[in-house]
Amino acid sequence: MSQTVVLKVRMSCQGCSGAVKRVLEKMEGVESFDIDLKEQKVTVKGNVQPDAVLQTVSKSGKQTAFWEAEAPAQPEVKPTEEVKPAEEVKLAEEVKPAEEVKAAEAVATA
Image (tube, rainbow, N blue to C red; front, side, top):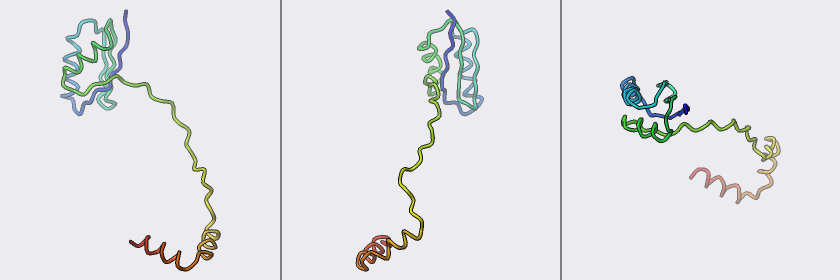
């Protein structure tokens, strides 16, 4: 039964992708494969078992793992804390006792 196996393989140059190519060309059951150096992605099609493909590509000496499906984009989380206008912050600072303000300034400059 033909299936597709997608791997993430750490490759930094054409020599690295060449090493992966050599081991895949020798692997029994491989019908075709695509090596994307930029994406660090290897797609293998054929009558192969995923674990066998992973082990074979690992023999190239490259760090290899199964390509994980990309998680759907998470919605941007907005802060729930309300931002106070500068005037309110200034008023709040004026209400503090002088000793508290001096202590806060000393900590801020330390």
